[in-house]
Amino acid sequence: MLEGETPRLIDEWQEVPPLWDAVRHLVDERAAKGQFILTGSATPNHKGILHSGAGRIAKLRMRPMSLYESGDSTGKVSLQSLCGGEVAPVMTGEVELKRLIDLVIRGGWPGSLGLAIQQAALLPSEYLNAILDDDVYRIDGIRRDTSKMRLLLRSLARNESTTATNRTLRSDIKAVDDEDIDPDDIFKRLFITDNQPPFSQKIRSSVRVKQAEKRHLADPSLACALLKATPEGLLGDLETLGLLFEALCERDLKVYAESFGANLYHYQDYSGREIDAVIELSDGGWCAFEIKLGANQIDAAAENLIKIHDEIARDEKGKPPAVLCVLCGLANAAYRRADGVFVVPITALKN
Image (cartoon, rainbow, N blue to C red; front, top):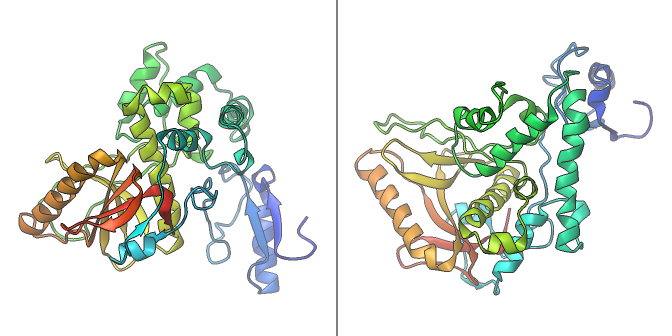
């Protein structure tokens, strides 16, 4: 399997774990880089793997497509430039609410491009069915009750874009069954969840930052499939739509940020202050983002960002965010407000 032209891609390599050590051996023998790409839909247990791969194999997570990758963002605003405080005012075009709803339900799956929304919605649903019926068992050979696993997934979908605790998730399951299931381990290994870690400044500060992760499924379309969300249903439930839109934006921010060595977090402290998304740059600087679906929410979001910025700088004597930005859905321009806060539509963003 390892013989032939390079770079050589081996998909679902975890089905034959000894391939890992064989690849590591050939990398040492050939003393050449870029020889193999090992892809898989699950993280295997370490049975049959003798070497960590340190110094030979780098690990990358492949995520669903961002809106820029799928052609649904114009890319008129670069996130890297934005984090450097550079955004030229530009008209980005009108965006309809129905279009945003379709993007949330469709998700970032390459196979869904060009399909009617009713057809596109089938892909994440069948993807989840395949995982529950097959992959959950294959990952470690343990038989699990798929109905309870589905309940747990629905609880994750119901708590999308929140900092719900494991206790909250378990209580959803125990409402119908007393069995205790680990809410994180199995779905993390199957790349179904992609949580957003908490941000804390790397300085001494009196602020007590909550250490809860923000819950995310790997793509907002998975939450839609589990909640049986339809365009009509989301149009009549703007609160749920807002959380799913936030998940869409944070999926894209994570993809874009990691492309230039930055990382995505969220901020929540015990004083009640929250920031939807934080991007930490490689030099230690950070940028704060509030995510809002409607343009009518921009003023309040900007005020919140400025308030937190000033309180960190004044009361906590910390390092405030270098850039403040409201990332929104229903806006037709990217610009910098008089108070210094940037406004950028998600449908205009790229890496």
